[in-house]
Image (cartoon, rainbow, N blue to C red):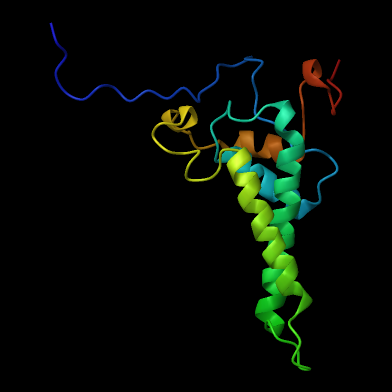
Length: 154
């Protein structure tokens, strides 16, 4: 017998308690601004999209995004042209950062092409992170079984 109506909407982004697959944590080497970019990126992507192997690309994304924001802020404050008529050096910084972000977006599947209906990752609905999940990422706490950064009480 054929099923009538719309097929049920399933999310595969929910992980069971104790599941070893967890969202990546921001590396300790990131600044606070870079850490915020990292948490926002990880939190708004499906849980299984990134692995430990993607960490270097993600760190590059975060540092470049913060550089682009800084350059955009400087251009907004001082303008793209200096008083002596030369182009602001921040213009080149911003231009290069945006170009780098574009390339990284494709590799990290953040671009529109990576989210297209034919892409495997676009079929997974992303649930909103709970306050505790976000806090855990921001604080960098880990359980004892995956590289403990915080000792467990006895």
